[in-house]
Length: 462
Image 1 (tube, helix red, strand yellow):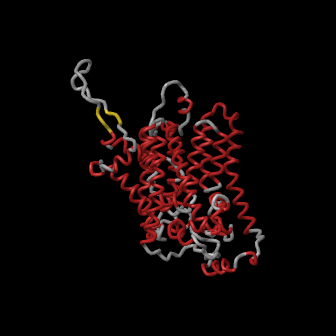
Image 2 (cartoon, helix red, strand yellow):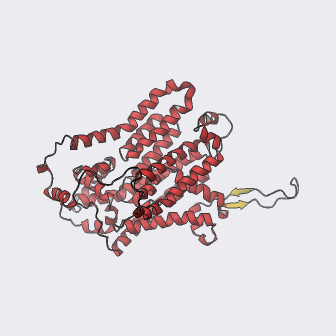
């Protein structure tokens, strides 16, 4: 029943996202941004205007790069910031399932349709994977349910829907970690390896493998080193292959200018493309003019800091031991601690904290919202944990009992009450919600909506 509830809510939010972005894109004129906007090479066909009207908002900002790569390949050096798996999937959908529409839709139109259909399906897969991962790691189905429903309202919503690789990466990462937690190491390595072909930060997932296969088995480390080394190589292989491909294309060029569309050469000249594009690096974003972007990232950064602080406060000894030996202890018959403070959550908090630190100091900080939302379950786990901890509407006291067998003054038991969809239940009773609930849901809903409004009209967003 929980999986059905999560899937229904995820499908509903996908449909609403598509509808809202189309209406907002039609109502608000597009901003003339200084962004990568390649010229169309094909004359529009019968259905292209309709597809562009309804789905055009999904093709802005970095989505232009992914669509360009899917359509024409890696022609510009800066395209190599975008990994190949997502463009390959888009082109595959356009040339197979959507090929019958080629008579009335150009390749670009079919790619846009592939974005909407593909990312919607991938998002559904990612939410199911997140729910399964939550059940295994948290050992608390209520917390897993609420966190998965919050994920359906992710602050990075527009990037899960638009032509970005976030939904793909989230599905593969959460699915791979679920398989790893269940003990399917080779399958997990395969899923995480494919994830690395979608985004470079998939390399960080090697830490989960190393921690589970080496550090937790210190007394038999030699026996597991081969598995860990092989798995590391498999996960890193797509990243290394893609880097070598870029090296061959630009350091030993085999593509002559005559093979490139003249219009694309002119675009490179007009835009002044060089070998430095985003100026990322340690502390390079720490400028006064970037304060608004730091404020945009502040809510997600706050969730990350709160998660790390609360986990350390409850488990200081485990954190100082780097989470060692706890897993071995969990194999005993006694039941491990469920919920956010479970021993198995430790590594996920460390992973999220590392991503938070790297994103804050070495990246464009506003990217933190989608960077963490697609790579880590922790922002959703800590948000759900706070809701269940502080929201009275999700708590009920046990009914009065007779005095027989109970001393006067004995407190009634407090237990969690969850309707079928706790998030909708809280939203429908907004005025009676607690302050922490309003802050958390307000953040999720406001970013969910603002992203659709701003990104679909080429306005700056996270």
